Length: 73
Image 1 (cartoon, rainbow, N blue to C red):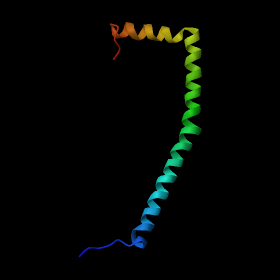
Image 2 (image 1 turned 90 degrees about the vertical axis):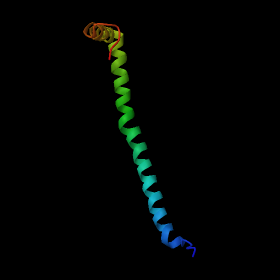
Image 3 (image 1 turned 90 degrees about the horizontal axis):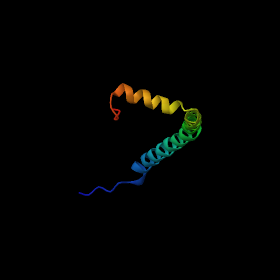
């Protein structure tokens, strides 16, 4: 016996599942745009400022001396 799925039985569940996916995707985009992007812009600005003042090069020299060789990690 072959059972044919009725759209009313599984169509509602699929609509709910698709709605959940769309809402979670929207939440992810909002998180990326309104939270992560501004944090990345601030960190980029801070690192460019530190690089212009030579602080990043000094940090690199300290890390290399602590490691004892040219490879860090």
